[in-house]
Image (cartoon, rainbow, N blue to C red; front, side, top):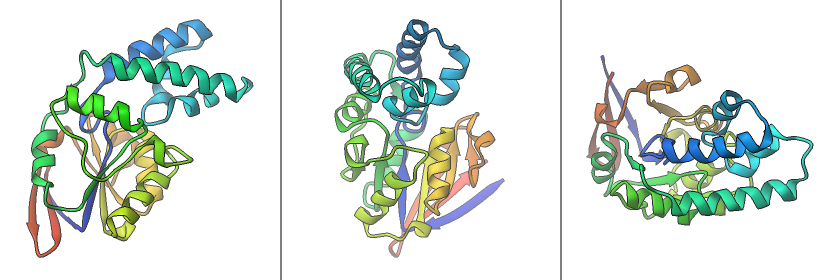
Length: 217
């Protein structure tokens, strides 16, 4: 089935959408999980798309926030340094090249240093407009990041299309009033507007200030 969408801007998540960092993320979180005596399946089901300190606050609600911030900082440093195994999601580089002359932005729960490290490891560059953990007070599933990206691009939320993979990210995009394309086999379960296996199923055409996205599902 072919679906065509038109928008004025495209907003893209990073981990799980443009970059596959699963091996690094899950390895570090499983190390943390073992130390805390938590259920690994419950932890891995929660963490994707969120800032580490926010995930820790949900998983250990009685723990002082200062400890969460300190451990999240340590995890971030390791994630930034340990990029072996980080690769491009199929079709991501082609999509970014197609959007080069169109309004688009990265919206990620990573900070800018981590975003640069992972995008570089996957052979891509961070878009000129990027909203990272450095720019928001609330992480996904809060819509703050997507709404800020729309403002930076000068585009109304309803005229943006989001590419996301995680439950938290898809919730955030929908809460921002945007159409959301779920990327990856698990994304369809999180109620995106449309879902794709990967980004090779997307083609882009730019016409009269509009972005036409054709989805082959």
